[in-house]
Image 1 (cartoon, rainbow, N blue to C red):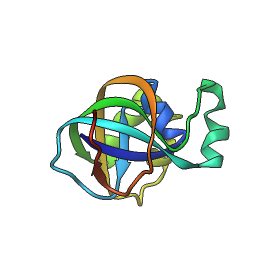
Image 2 (image 1 turned 30 degrees about the vertical axis):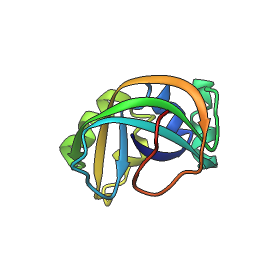
Image 3 (image 1 turned 135 degrees about the horizontal axis):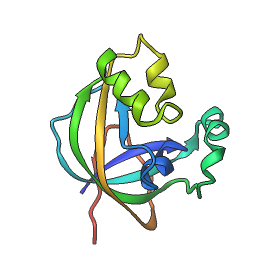
Image 4 (image 1 turned 90 degrees about the vertical axis):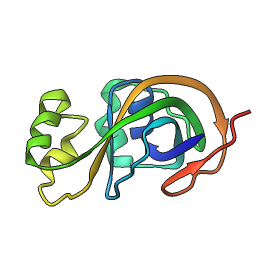
Length: 129
């Protein structure tokens, strides 16, 4: 199964259904089931910003199963959509007019028992037993 590694707190925000887009500078044609792996590192500034959500953070493990249903090119119109959805969660993309990249639409998210495994860059494969 495909896996995407994401820094905390963003992995938890996705796993708990708060953040529905993951942003990358690269595009993918992949659509379908995906596992969310929380990396061993964290964005400390973002951890402070999102304390209001009081989430349980796990590191270095797969924490959720979901689906990539779409990939959207980030432009000014899409920034308006993000602002309406959640201006706190998407603040870094809304405010950064120089950002050129893609939003992976993440749906059907469910938490799973953590699977401790080393992350990788890009979309990578993990054999689910």
